[in-house]
Image (tube, rainbow, N blue to C red):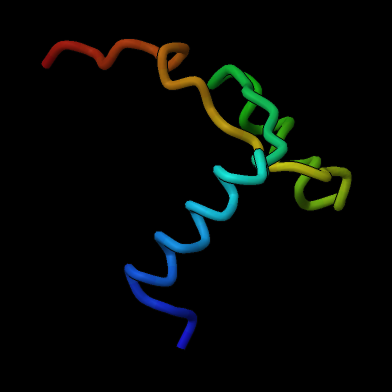
Amino acid sequence: MIGGIAETQEMLDFCAEHSITPEVEIIDASQVNEAWENVLASKVRYRYVIDISTLPEPAEV
């Protein structure tokens, strides 16, 4: 058991009260392979977040 909704809300409230935020690096979709290689090589100290506005448009069918 890792907690339910109430515990999660308590944790989020605590983080907000104490200005605790995650460390992230926002990357373009074109950088996903490079980011994954960094994850596999343990070169990452934060989370990668993919900017979905950089995803290519889907092809028309």
